[in-house]
Amino acid sequence: MRHGLRFEITARDRTGGRTGVLTLAHGRVATPAFMPVGTYGTVKGLTPRQLSEAGVQMVLSNAYHLALRPGVETIERLGGIHRFMGWSAPVLTDSGGFQVFSLAASVKVDEEGAVFRSHLDGSPVRMTPEGVVDLEYRLGVDIGMAFDVCVAKPGDRKAAADGAARTLRWTRRTRQALREDASTAIFAIQQGGLFEDLRREAAEALIELDFPGYAVGGLSVGEAREETMATAAASVAMLPDDKPRYMMGMGTPLDLVELCGQGYDLFDCVLPTRNARNGSLFTRSGPFSIRNACHASVDEPLEEGCDCEACNGFSRGYLHHLAKRGEMLGAILCSLHNVRFYQRLMADIRAALAANAYDGFRTAFRARYRGGTDA
Image 1 (cartoon, one colour):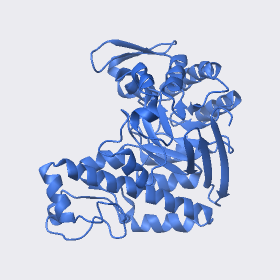
Image 2: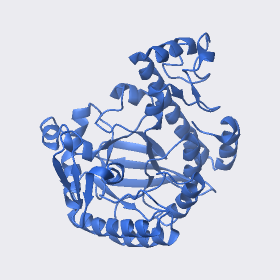
Image 3: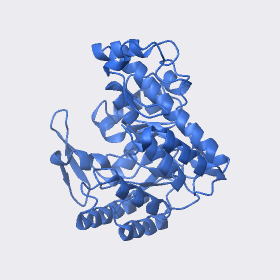
Image 4: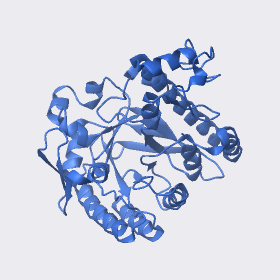
């Protein structure tokens, strides 16, 4: 495996979607795949065994946050990220580029990199493209992301152009820091806001650098969904067909169904577990809140046909009670259901793509999913 990764496309659908197998240092991942988010080295409320039994193939963590606490030295002493987490399957880490956007008030960006004010104690933390690569290598992750600039206003042409240009300069430095024999694969990130020409320029330059995988970043940060999806469709077509293509930070079930038809291979989003902790649950007929009073006396599962533990042994009435009381078990069971829902959805997506029947699947899902709205 070159750069710690091998990718094989196993089937193609007429929509442009495809299935594949991504082979990494810690296992194989059937694609398209959705990664639950475990920012601090844990998917909140769920054990590694529960994640595995739910069908999760790979999880996402965050190099910036892990570098702050417990620190890379501690994780190295404890055997690397997989042993530290008790998770033997693949791990992807975001680089901290999103934190340049989300923590903008406490970040100063310059040509060298970014200086963060730690949200823990206010101490300065310098992150550079080279330093991020070294951090991800030391953590021992399967896929690490190059350090990039995510802009707050993707519709602002100057901001998008400046962010894309700096991202490219940083990515060239990242490429120089890569080791051919490393077990960690580093992906480049395409920026460019909502502007197709900026996205194309970025893609062409990044392809010349020959990374093992590519991501589309800087979307779903407040712009209209129609703009997001149009930019996503244009962007994926610019990236190499023979390498994995990762849409960062999306999506809702409807997002995933659309994006898989566009040809994306990897996804992550906080929605399944974050929503679950607030009592918002995903089902094939659409989302609902278990906190609503109408569920208080319902002796039925969250979703008929779901094989998760929450749906096989507990009633809506009981889960409503747990959610209203703020009981930890309620958040755990709701999280388990949502994670399993997403993995079942991805399995159905892969099956439809492999059968070259994705148009019908997508149409049926939209019609069934409560008139085409998400939570």
